[in-house]
Image 1 (cartoon, rainbow, N blue to C red):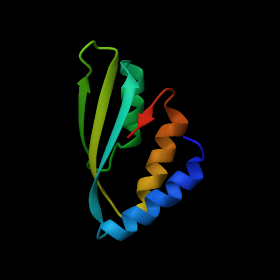
Image 2: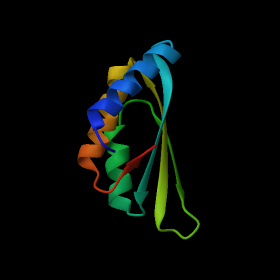
Image 3: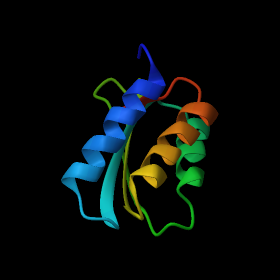
Image 4: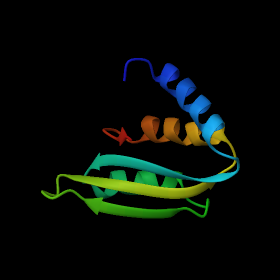
Length: 94
């Protein structure tokens, strides 16, 4: 990612234009298969009433983590992306 802030600005505009808030939002992350990393992501979304699903890749090297959660506004969505990127090493946000 060249400029994360530019990416988040575009994402905020898209979210504001395409959704009525509050709304359910689906986060998708890919991490190297490691229980600790998966638990780090899950803990970031604790107490938000989120539905979390994980699925390992065919060879088991990576795990995708899908999180469906109700968010208040685009700023809250972006704050969670930033928190995951900051706290979980090697995560890829989709």
